Length: 81
Image (tube, rainbow, N blue to C red; front, side):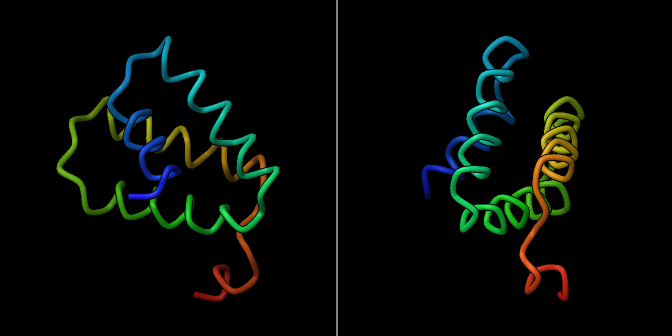
């Protein structure tokens, strides 16, 4: 599992106080490294659609997806899919 995936899973399972720091780090990492953006988008969509997670975990994933959408866009190749 990649470090990015581990960060997403940690955020999904964490509480609010630890989660907010993880969100900032994830967004900053993808802003600095555009090649990670599509990976994060795909992981979030996969976790949201194929995950029997509890409601608060899904809410955190949706929040992270929204924050990604306002922070950076996916690559052109991912937008065409």
